[in-house]
Each structure stands twice: as structure tokens, then as C-alpha cells.
Amino acid sequence: MSILFMLIAILNIFFPAMGWHMRYGWMAQGESEPSDAYLLMSRISSVIVLIVFLLFFLPIIFS
Image (cartoon, rainbow, N blue to C red):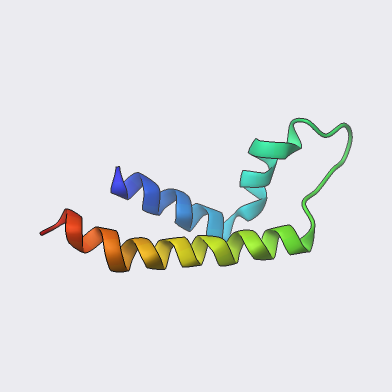
């Protein structure tokens, strides 16, 4: 489960538009793309979540 969590966070860092298309893109009619602000905040939040996970939860799992 932890590997899946890390994989999703890493994918969201490198491909944040993919997450937008899976969550919001299918609802939009026509050619709709995520804003640059959304992509930036998605990357920043994924990095923060991944760091918190690696620092706090991963050592608990392997101890």
C-alpha cells in the first residue's frame, strides 16, 4: 500500500495534468486544460505529501 501511495505522489509530481483530466477533465465540454496555477500547486502539494510520508510514516512501517 505504501508503494502505491509513493507511486501516485511521484506520478502527480511529473504528470499533474493526468490527475486533473481524471478528476475534472471528463466533465468539461470541449478543449479544456488545467491552469498553470493548478499544475504548480498540485506538484508542490505532492512533494510535501511525499516528504511527510517518507519522514514520518515509512520508518514506522519498517520498524
